[in-house]
Length: 311
Image 1 (tube, rainbow, N blue to C red):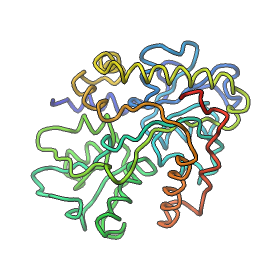
Image 2 (image 1 turned 60 degrees about the horizontal axis):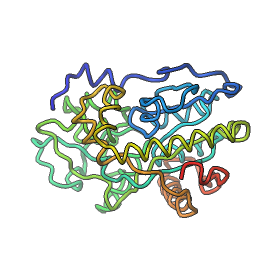
Image 3 (image 1 turned 120 degrees about the vertical axis):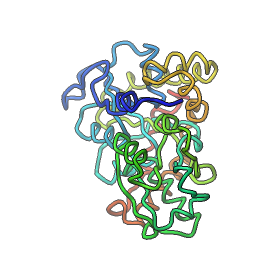
Image 4 (image 1 turned 90 degrees about the vertical axis):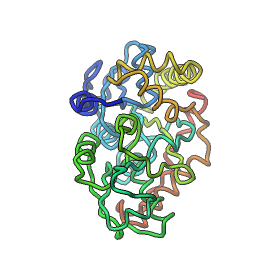
């Protein structure tokens, strides 16, 4: 399972501009501009060519993707549960159009087995790397809470995935909290999973739509969401074929792809008020920790006009 650093870097350093270029701040005319991450559900739609005519832009993480929404560069993007909250706090105009079922096993705390850490509590006083404002940021908060610790008990080093992997490999940090497929790529001999999000965080995927695009491209977005749901369902029903299709897109081998997808890929879930409550609780938690500047009303971002389009 050893992958070369060059191969990993080729995968995780790629940013926007795959399969089409973003339009300007006029929301791209009549063309839907989709922001995706290598491993999100949208990547399968792209890899299968199920949405011809759209423009695709690749992002390394959710926070980078929400910045593109704010800049008017994309219409739709897929992130984890924390980026929408940080984006709302930054006054990014967007709505939440769809979500997926929980995927708690697809994000985890990784440590070197040689360090001897047996539980998350052993990381008291240690340095932990993670991507600021991403889904794993909330996992850190919940892990600290579950172990009677606070942010003052650890040193947090905010690193993007492309920075986190070499820092972890070279023992510059004691632990790395990361999501798939970076998680799967890092599962090398000598690497131990200290904890995942089971029982702590749902780790859902969310489809975000720029507010202006939601008004101007409502029917196009509904059509795209229906395609997204159909493709997602196909992938879940055909895991081996899904891995074969996605491996070239991810630039990793099929075995690693299939292992990561087995814990990460989930069906589209109903966008209910309970989902809004779930996100609001996370937002309130970030506010209490002064990780975002003041309270944000995330519940109000749930856009029911798209209900059923991807369900």
